[in-house]
Image (tube, rainbow, N blue to C red; front, side, top):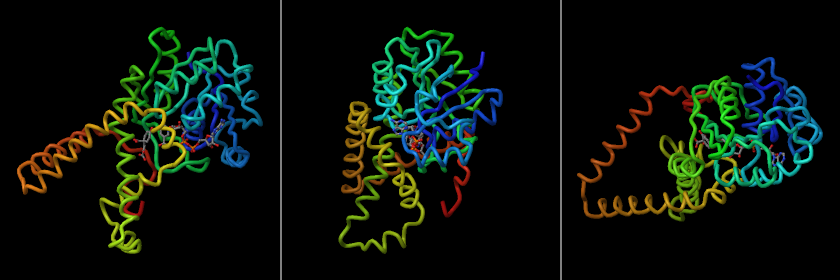
Length: 301
Ligand SMILES: NC(=O)c1ccc[n+]([C@@H]2O[C@H](COP(=O)([O-])OP(=O)(O)OC[C@H]3O[C@@H](n4cnc5c(N)ncnc54)[C@H](O)[C@@H]3O)[C@@H](O)[C@H]2O)c1
Ligand SMILES: O=C(O)C(=O)C[C@]1(C(=O)O)C=C[C@@H](O)C=C1
């Protein structure tokens, strides 16, 4: 039931990892790939991210039974239009985008009549580009599939099996619900990291040198996340606007309550919140989801 030829469009962190993971876990599956950037294509060929790096997207999808778009979410529609005339009739079209409702619409709009099953492997790093990918990225991580209500169950089962073969745990979710959940677990945390690092670098009373010198612990962790790709994250916020604004409203209210507790010297409110959040961290660690990132946890990371 597995795929025999997978085309990967976009050969950065995610596309490269998909190609390498297929080579390792599904060695009988052929892979082709395409990236709009010729330097990325050259580097992808050097690293062997996919079996064949093609000069055009149409060439890459010829004969493929699965096409995985691994481009920034704002580029999905343009990338899909490029393959519209070359798409094999029975192929499944999927992606790895971080927001799902807008991406599903973009792919279905660009490829009318195609079998489109969007997906989001909740696995990544702050790195990007063709040197960033690695075969184990998806191991023990969630991959959320957001098929439309009328999706072919066989196509959903086949794509689920594909992601399980790459090491992921698969969950099926409605696209709008995915966008709300990920707004809180991934998108707003990135927004907070971008904000705090930006705020620190804008301070007038504290020099930039001091920010760098004393950035141990907490701030350093924020700088890792704030180093994430600007194009990718611009597109995430533009395509998941409503869910992000909804969750940001709640976050702002909670932040205001915390501000009030500090101003009033309400130690109990502070302690209660910090004790509750410590328990959340403990249950995440206890769930034992291995982190596949190669140097995660390294002190100099
Ligand atoms: N980085 C993460 O942690 C992470 C995790 C999960 C999902 N994602 C999602 O994966 C996708 C790719 O992210 P990434 O981190 O691999 O980014 P990346 O920058 O490493 O790679 C994206 C690649 O897409 C190429 N590209 C852009 N437009 C194109 C087009 N029209 N046709 C062909 N190639 C095109 C770029 O040249 C680039 O090489 C995004 O949609 C992102 O939301 C990222
Ligand atoms: O670990 C990181 O560096 C990530 O940002 C990975 C992360 C996340 O927020 O968890 C980022 C975006 C994705 O769509 C999925 C995963």
